[in-house]
Length: 427
Ligand code: UD1
Image (tube, rainbow, N blue to C red):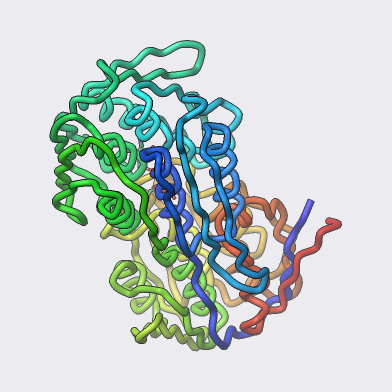
């Protein structure tokens, strides 16, 4: 199994291109199910999750063609066409490996009048149910049947009537499923307490380009007037704000100066505020962000929240950075339980962190030391990379497949800006 080897202690310096956002790509791809015309998605990151999603779409009858950007270029172009659906089910095997595959539920239901998906089961970052996805579809007129670990959603008469969806808590995925299902419903759907993440805005814009009628984009109340059919379109994935934030944390801990090409400040306000408070300089540039740091960090108090709050997907990377701050930081995770699995691994590298319930207190230390480590989810794995970049000696990050799910050519990007990092494929 591959592993990544880092010899830490080098400042990062130079230009680093930010890829298309994983979480946006994963909600734009299922839009192809909503029309019999081609949907072309540009700026698609080369990631294992994107490939897996493509395979799932193939199984449902969607043809996919990837236009060949050269290996040295970033951002692929994928054209998908669902002339007709050949299956209406997302099986356990796929949903278990990639939770985002639940995002086919809404569009299949809208297109075929019925859809079956496996219930996802447990997940490394806690119990992540899909009750909100199901309640939303029910509020829009779907009938649900559960059996043997699967849920089947049926639209009476083949088309959902639409309705009012009131989310008790903010859910990105459930908002996305509801939006896609509502686009071709018979009537109006109102989604209250909708997620406002930039990836939701990206989804709305893509659906609008396909002919959907959506009001309130970017707010917590979305009104969708269903149209009879959607048409083909071309749409470019937004830059990955989490990838950009992760590399900014890397500069924070190593010191140096990185130009994050393509990163958009307006979608990263909470991350930028946190970086600045910690003593990392962030400047807005025409085509990206300039991040610079001396390696001297101040402690922070942070709590994760739905957008525009501080993203749960940035918590682990900030924690890694703050292990070297002068003083004690307090981080509170409010979105997911079990999202501190990087803590014992960071501790093995010399970090001083105490977790009590949902709160972690990080006492800054003078120095981290390299060690063999591994993590059980994507962002936790990135926190170990960040720690490794600053640690003394060699860090081996195992279970690289987590990183390959969400960071395009991580070791290539980091070594191009001065890190001593490589992939060991025989490990
Ligand atoms: C998405 C992102 C993920 C990010 C998360 C929160 C993708 C592919 N993934 O995940 O990277 O960390 O948003 O920003 O875009 N919940 C329920 N019932 C449900 C659905 C969710 O109780 O039916 C709970 C979850 O357990 C969690 C909270 O709602 O506590 C928010 O989860 P949600 O926003 O749905 O996360 P995802 O869409 O899975």
